[in-house]
Image (cartoon, rainbow over all chains, first blue to last red; front, side, top):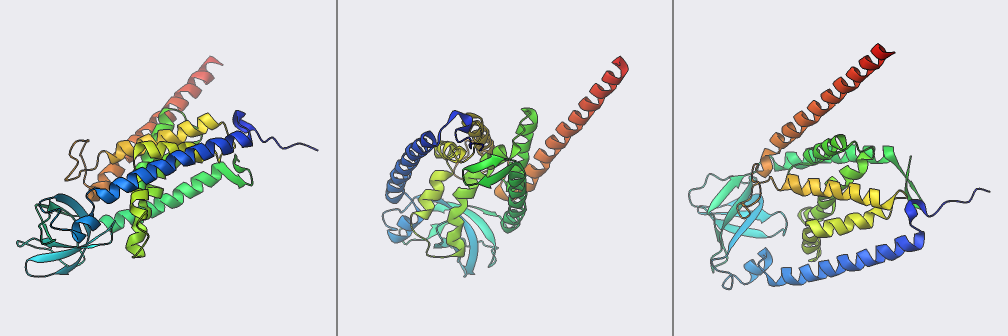
Length: 154
Length: 152
């Protein structure tokens, strides 16, 4: 009976598992270190929860406008999923606009828009990226097949 | 960031220039920082996602952890490990190079050429380069065939 070759690429299964564990440990430490720093440094959650501490801090946020009032509009930050009140009196902003906004936070907890840019084609970009993702899946599985030992060449 | 079509086209250009047969590995590397890095978008669809999601996504969309993850993913391929890892890392590098062209109000220090919503210029640019490379390749192969016919 033909014995299955399990050490393709000069790497035995044990070596692969050992290296995998080492790399996972490195990644874990990178993540925990960054995570600890992230919680201490400037992030949207910290700014909105303790605005007096971060008064004058410049920040860039991007997302969709969910509410527009006389002087303010409210942006739902895409990443943090937080509602950011933004002062922008000379506005021509509509509900549903996708924006990237840069400016300082005040001690009252709102942002003053110093720079602003429309990014209304952002959803379309994600749409075509989905098509690109499907192309990648097709390309990948035309070159590789999944076996119980991992991905093998077709 | 440019869209994924631009990332894929840039990866394909690299494959063409270096005559890489395993294109999918370079493309995997070219999309890898975004595949995991965009996990934070889940927060947009499912509000109340865990707090660690944003730091985790941010970590993955930085060069060094991305290279470590490429080394990790290469272990799942029963192919020459070093070759697999290098091809994925090559794709990774292409990702960060093309991301570096995106403008930001904060980081003006890279090559800020395009805003995120001007991605179609990136597609056009990479598509034209890729098309030119393919045309040159076709011409080169045709010229070689003709010279072979003449000598025989």
